[in-house]
Length: 211
Image (tube, rainbow, N blue to C red; front, top):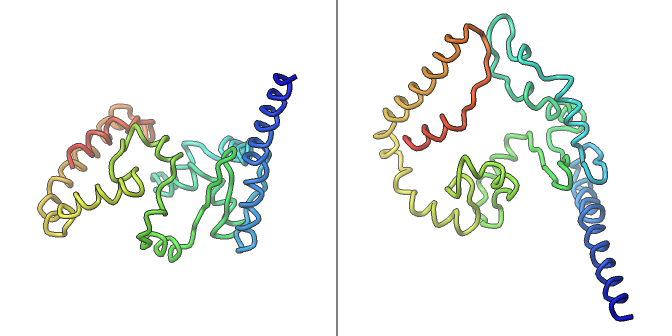
């Protein structure tokens, strides 16, 4: 009898937790943002807007879309993430979409982004999802850290970010960037093509190690 009761209690607790995580919490968040004028595409229960994102990528992106009038365009965002522009046209500059149960707030107003960047509160940290995603590239350094860890690292590195210090290292940055760009250009010329896929993670890791 006790074992049955414990099992039912455990199942009830798991169901309640999943209900809050998958349905109740996202619904409350959408309601709060909607009351502030922030809309967005309606997510599905478990996948969020992943189906729409996948459909947009499969029908829009192509390597040829990166070339206009024989020249490579640098409007890479509309080619790599076409769904962002599509939703901005439909819901405005600021909107929210979902990757599974993870909410993503898209901000397209430059003044608002600038105001957020001026915020010094340690509570306004970086996403744990982005930290896990970009962890192999940035590690636990200043770019990926948040809160007290970020403040501690920022305090240590602040003297090196002074304008005079940066001017001294500017030539090193230019030299490293030029070398990296030349290596990519040589790869492109060896292929004899206007476009090619390049794995840049190792190249960027070496570049950041130099600068």
